Amino acid sequence: MKRKLSVLALMVAVILAVGLVNVPYAFGNEAEPAIDAMEITQGSVGSLAGAIWTTDSEGKNVNKNIYDSKEEVYLNGGPHGGSGKGIPEGSYFVKVTTPDGKTLLGMTPESQKIEVGSDGRMVKRYHLMEILSEDGTDDGTKGYKDTTNPGGEYKVWISPNEEFKPNLTDNFKVGKGTLTIKKVIESVNGNNGPRNGSPVFTVIVTGPGDYENTIDNVVPGVPVVLKNLKLGEYTIEETDIPPGYRWVSTDPATVDLTEEGATVTVTNREE
Image 1: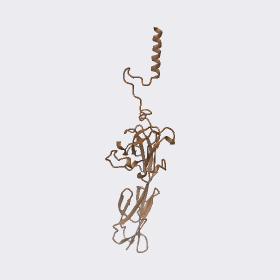
Image 2 (image 1 turned 90 degrees about the vertical axis):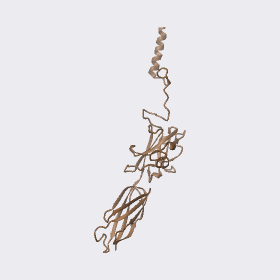
Image 3 (image 1 turned 45 degrees about the vertical axis):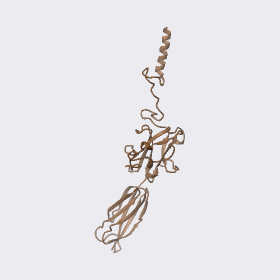
Image 4 (image 1 turned 90 degrees about the horizontal axis):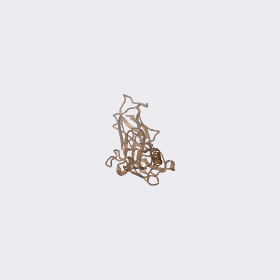
């Protein structure tokens, strides 16, 4: 009898030492549920297998990361490095933030969650401006807000839940440019510069995304510098020319702004 008890005690000790998986805990309660593959996979916050990246509408530039405008950015994802374990199958929320993750710029409503297939890849390329809204609701403004980052940088996230734990992220950048406007006066005596005082001119600048800026303090010799503009085509037009002057040229009147910047010279002549 003593020997039987000793064997039983040994068996209990072994079980307690190794921790039997899915044994009903608290002796009689239901077994602790296993953690789903879509949920936490490492630690209390966890991580997801696979990777995400940004690309263009055709998917030719994988992990392109630098774009002329927000409208060009698409999201894709799958196995890290093109091989290995992909993203767990299921539906995912997407959000875009500033690169430090502190400011939300846009998020998918429940109705716009993206899908990952059984092969660990997104079922298609997703256009961020189409699936996101600025406040994360179906009634919110489509797309996502401009980043406050001076370098034009954004971070995109995916997660199976709205807390975005666990998650996968990738950074991308929308290029910014600087437009410089110079005013030149041709005087009647052949010298550049006004004869009397410093006349003030008004210039209207229009560009991408309904950009419009009326600048009413353009003076000769003091360039107007517009920073952190979206890349694309801008038109410069002078208006309300002060008495005693006439417009001569705007060179160029339309400019394709790139990250290298652009300079426009508006010339007037004294009458």
